[in-house]
Amino acid sequence: MNRHLEAFLEMMAAERGAARNTIEAYRADLESALSHLEGDPVQATPEDLRGWLGSQSIYSARTQARRLSSLRQFYRFLAREGLRPDDPTELLDAPKAPAPLPKALSEAEVQQLIEGASRLPAAQAPVATAAIELLYASGLRVTELVTLPAGLMREEEPLVTVMGKGRKERLVPISRRAREAAMAAQAGLVPRGKGRLSARKWLLPSRGANGHLTRQGVGLLLKQAAIAGGLDPAKVSPHVLRHSFATHLLARGADLRALQTLLGHADIATTQIYTRVLEERLRAVVEEHHPLARG
Figure 1: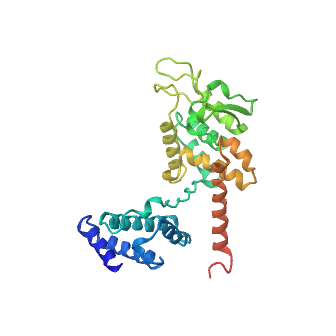
Figure 2: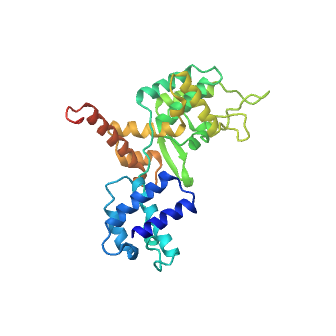
Figure 3: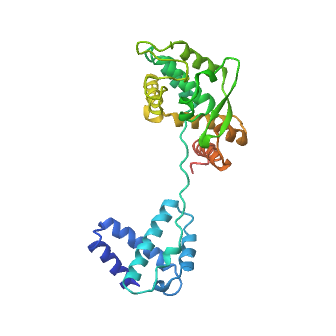
């Protein structure tokens, strides 16, 4: 087996141009794997390799995937050299990496963002404030926000009908504060004339071809508001506000099923990722403040 392993590593260096560190990583992965296989490793079956991979579950998905990649390269080499008739790793599934946790602003950072929007030039401040208030108050996707009709927002109507993904409609509650911000933005708009905007069709109109503010336009307004509010603009986006909406609701005791409806998720599993955010925060609090955690 040592002879076959050395031949494989020589091939990786000579034919693939693998760097020395890469070669050593292959060596460590393969020595670990092959030493745990019973019988002749050259003749290992998919079940043999699957059993070893199962023992690697204590490591991160990235580490498991890297070790499986090393095995694949090695057994493909053995098959290509005629040392075995097939490649047993073809039937092995790579471990799935957990979905990345959504990033959210703190409640204080959202307030900073809103205050930053109010400091923008007079032509931008009302629209930026309305966009932030609506995104954070409702959890709307940015595409849903920019395509809201102007007549949809009424002072006495707390619910609006939103067209979501797959052209599925849902009712979304809009807070009084967000409705007032939207109507304040509308109040500064006048009927079209001499290049001025029209407030008749879209809630957030623009001079663009679509007639409404674009996703990119909303993103730019949020970046400008972040800078004005003393926040890192890289931390702020329309999707971050959607995540903040969901995370803050759950933190304050919202029902997961209700949150699924508000966000327009077809599957509750998509919504459950927000519970992981809270778990991570709770763990961090314990590790930082519990007297025995640091040991």
